[in-house]
Amino acid sequence: MLGLACASALLAPHVAPADPGIQDIMNRLAPPLSRNAGHVYWLGTDQLGRDLLSRVVYGARVSLAVGLSAVALSATIGTLIGVLSGYYGRLWDDLLMRITDVQLAFPSILLSLAIVAVLGAGVRNLIAVLAFSGWVGYARVGRSRVLGLRHREFVEAARALGASHARILRRHILPGVLPSMLTIASFSVGGMITAEAALTFLGLGVPASLPSWGGMLTDGAQYMAVAWWLATFPGAAIMLTVLATNLIGDGLRDAFDPRSAGT
Image 1 (spheres, rainbow, N blue to C red):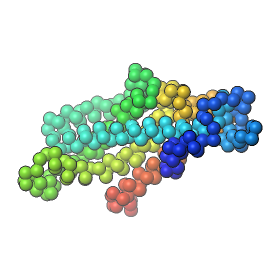
Image 2 (image 1 turned 90 degrees about the vertical axis):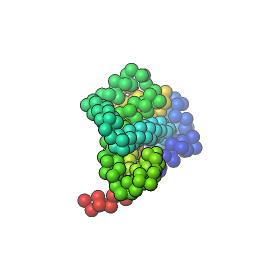
Image 3 (image 1 turned 120 degrees about the vertical axis):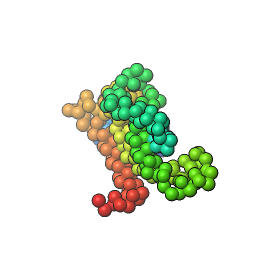
């Protein structure tokens, strides 16, 4: 399912049956499988007569780009902070962990709303906001993993042989931390896609000029009584993509931690 969504996003110009921005007011709110001049609207049209299937396909580009970019950025920042905090300890640990405690005191959705309201709507700002609100989990887990690794025999042996801190972190600490980070990242992709849809639904996410699943949900909510398909198909795309990322997260967790497979 995730591969299908990614392929649709990459091949959108070749897969989409029509231009997602072309309006046809005469065929507005056409139901699924309706026809007009030989063209089939497989998922119907929206309130401006735009082909809904094309908009769902192109919307995958924005939603997946925002979700994957935000996860990559937050995972990088959180892992770096967690590794440094756990490895060096003392002042570094106290300082960085207090920063995470302060951020955890704020609900992530409210923090995102406040920052987006100040910075303004836009794809770049949205990615930055989601990454800023999502790095804390990586930092916490990364720190706990490093605390369990930094006094292991192989790390002490490398330190006794004169290995630098950078080499120890790169060769001995990070390989033990990355499996947990990858598992968290796989679960976080769905959360980021949902957060993008929520912020766009509230008018603080992706601009209306770009087709996105969250934006289509916003439009469809106003026509649920007369055109159920406007919100149903983008919502199904979000649901299936989030489900796919969660299933991948389960598989990665079982692969990296076989003990969890039987629990």
